[in-house]
Image 1: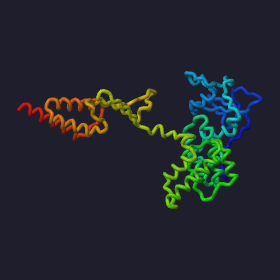
Image 2: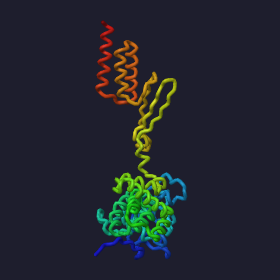
Image 3: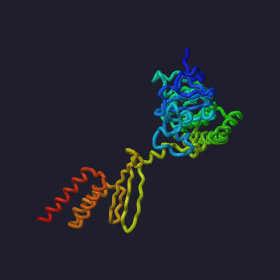
Image 4: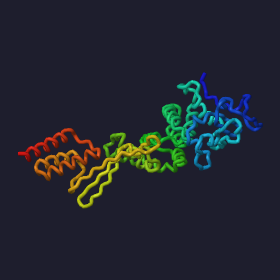
Length: 359
């Protein structure tokens, strides 16, 4: 016998001090004693713990106003005597049965056993988790949706439409578009109509273009199949998926930004570390290293430049010593890590120059 999530919305209310209303009923499972968060959907009252909900959930029901300084001023949070503070969720956002699935994830008595949820349950969970900012719950739901959907929804286009309607991540949806564009079977009129009715927009013509671009590239490749990276680039570019929903990881992958200005023979380069946008203890931390080199020298290769400065010091007497020494000191102060061999060579060169002057 398969266990299912219990999302029952009716039942005998428990005897509590919470004021009763003939128009409302407490959820039999998720009206929990000691909870400080009250949520009303249709005529069903949920009572849960505010600590289990992200800040973004409360912001969604705060009439576009900033949240108060303390949690007891946030929407829905209050004691038993504050029934009027309950968050009212419209049925267009979630039904009591759908919201109970989120509550089930928060209060699953089996902890690591999620087998009670059907594929449709996980689709409801991922939609609400994405809507209200339950980041970890969304990630968990996605891990369970994709493997099960491949077996339970064998029709490729039906699975694609389902993913699009629930706004699953682009990297998952792109896999289905690539499979659709590279299959041997063409698109029927019914499939083109379904693609044109997707929330993303009319995709029938784009998919046709993607198929044409793929088969053209394969023909130019002598009829041999393309490598996955090229196949993805051709199809994603033809469909315009990258421009519609840019990847959220692409912005974080950019770890270095450089600004160079050339004026009066001087060059300044500023490197920002990958932790430039990180936040520690509520304060943004920024690590920046700057290298300044006079005399019109290039800053593209610090190692080669440092070696040249050491050799120039050996050849140039006092002037070379000053130029090489100041450059080396400037770089050490700026936090640039020089190779040990370069540092040792510089020290030996300076010592030789010193003893040469004594002689």
